Image (cartoon, rainbow, N blue to C red; front, side, top):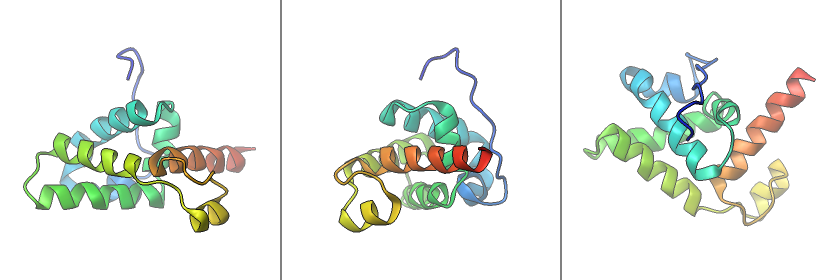
Amino acid sequence: MNATNQIPATQNEEWGFWGTMNEHASAGWPLAMAAISDATHQPLESVQSFLDSRHGRHFADDVQNGLYEGMALAESINAATGRWMDWTIGRQTSKQYGIPRGMPYLTGFVIHCEIVEESLVA
């Protein structure tokens, strides 16, 4: 992530990543934004849309699992990011969401959430 980029604030404090992370939300948000943007090569605004979505809640669940196992916050976010990048979009998910089959799961859902967000504004 470019240090000159300003990390956008969450637009969903009740749900998504922020709501699921509870007391770890304010510390975890910038770490997750940077890790996901770096891994997916997507802009911070797209990552924000992802983290504020229900998919961001599922990502936060994965991070919380790492915390439960004793990982530090940054380590857990990096582990979840790596896992989500290792998974690929399968046939059913591709059909349901229109994300190309074989794409890294995290990249696919970050882009998907950006497209959904843009369609709501248009």
